[in-house]
Image (cartoon, rainbow, N blue to C red):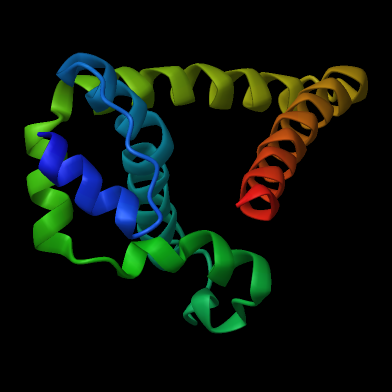
Length: 139
């Protein structure tokens, strides 16, 4: 194990050892869930049949950036989804709760709650980027 860890350290990687359950849940949250959402979003939009045309032709920066990972290998993601299904399902349920909250706030035209929801997300995202910038600059 130490030989492999040293190999990764020599490439500039930070090696973190953790138990399998924690690993699966962390990866389900930060990698697998975004892929599942990107795949579902592309399918949702590409199957939207309100208009006779393919509305994906209007895609620009935001949609393309968000869905870039939906171009990943389908076979690999099938295998990941099957192998880590418990943790992925747990994260999908977490996502569904927040999506339901967002949907309810929009339906209720609750501007205050919407702004709080968006602000909390923005602050969390900004903190991630700030921490990543510090790590990169600190190397």
